[in-house]
Image (cartoon, rainbow, N blue to C red):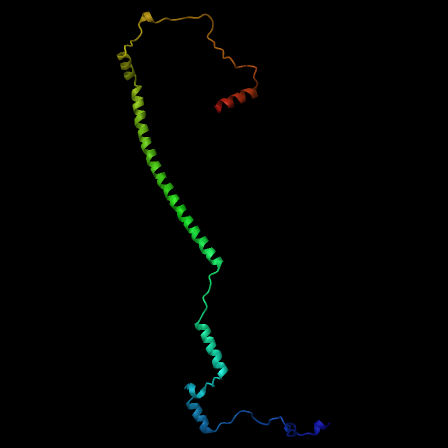
Length: 189
């Protein structure tokens, strides 16, 4: 009930309570001066650099010295091994390309030789066919002293019996499977 007896003005009279607006009030001259210089940046006036302490100056100098003198870095063994393996693979690739080039050149030479041999074969085949011409054979036989047989040199023989031949080693009792095997073996001979 005691709280209901207090008035509205008494409510804000505590020690840490503020009554009214907390915004800073500027006089008109200061307001005009700030408005005139609002678009201009004067870093020296607005932002003043604070003085560097002795400890900060020393730490900055140490950092600069560390950055200036950098220790020599070592190359890792894995990187060296990787570069060497890549180099070896490149050399191997070049050797393979050289071999492929040599093989292709030999193939071209062999194809040229094959075409030359085919032409030579055609020439030799025509010479062979000319050598077995009947007129050439007859002329060669007559020049060697051979003549056609006369009627007195021809004899005819007549044999009694039928004209029939028997092949030995051929048995007729051989079955279907045996004949099939024999024909297959003759085919591959």
